[in-house]
Length: 255
Ligand SMILES: NC(=O)c1ccc[n+]([C@@H]2O[C@H](COP(=O)([O-])OP(=O)(O)OC[C@H]3O[C@@H](n4cnc5c(N)ncnc54)[C@H](O)[C@@H]3O)[C@@H](O)[C@H]2O)c1
Figure 1 (cartoon, protein in one colour):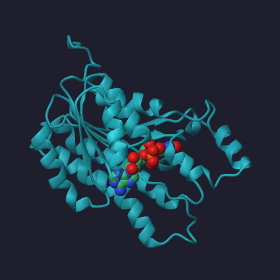
Figure 2 (cartoon, protein in one colour):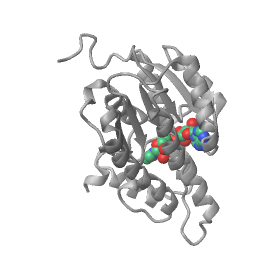
Figure 3 (cartoon, protein in one colour):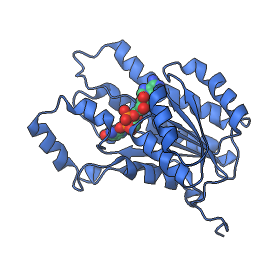
Figure 4 (spheres, protein in one colour):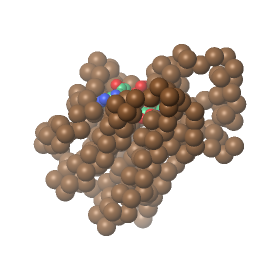
């Protein structure tokens, strides 16, 4: 039975979003806020967080934290939960790109990418799944990976490694947490017009840009396309969906 409040009413939900200082994380925060969610916005970029907070209609709280400090996450998040209340959702958006061929890739660089893009997600999931920190009928974890977690790409080995690992975390944790009714899903975006893409695209020539367009039958995506999918997976409308990797890529992986 549909609840009277409607599935897209987030007024009873408190959701932690990482990477909320920019791009996909910011758009997801603003969208969820407009649907009534209370938010905890996490990012390394304090100014970006404040800008996001200004755009949010509903109550939000900021948590400035460098996700490479995986060990410091437990205290930082638990202090925040004590202040704002238990969480109904965790959306792991933060991530860094790494465009480097294997020949020049250093182990320290790959380790840093893995720490921020993957290990921080694992640690945040562990914190969220603790009974002290979550509440609600269908608590939801959503990870943001990439099409490069599904298909290969030259000079992307470290990034691809970190995103493919998110698929493993999503599937196995979904099974482990099903008994607690905690859902775990993942969105694998194609190329989205955000600051991250701007940063990476400076090294693209015209020919590569054309190839990139051709790889997306529906053109490049917008942050809102990913935010919309995240809203669905965070809502009770998707209450029986867990362990899924949802491609949101304008047809990239259908080719
Ligand atoms: N933009 C794309 O084309 C695209 C495609 C596929 C997947 N993705 C993934 O989507 C996610 C968001 O990307 P985006 O395009 O919005 O990028 P973005 O650069 O606009 O936003 C990423 C956010 O993560 C934060 N962040 C980075 N390192 C951090 C750290 N150590 N600690 C805390 N916060 C940190 C940044 O400050 C930034 O606010 C990433 O995980 C990215 O890999 C993006």
